[in-house]
Length: 124
Image (tube, rainbow, N blue to C red; front, top):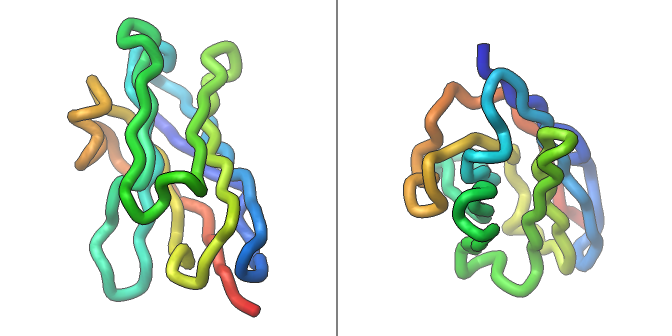
């Protein structure tokens, strides 16, 4: 059974930082591209960052809205993907999720059911 467990969210002031973690189980983690997604109230879930699996050289993708502020990374030994979020803005407020895909280009929808996510709130 595939499972994603996200953690690290919280309340932070604008300009602050958070580091999210997602522990994956039930998949051969290292071969999959991994993505971070977010869903704000009243909006569709969107892919914000992705990182390729071991066979694809570790290439990355970032949505324009987070480019230069967010950094995705992975630790294949720990089956964990991270999202370092700096210079946070109120519009980054959302529930953040992770999921897997065959390639970075195929991450848009995610291959598996999403987990519970972790809430990020950016507010003064």
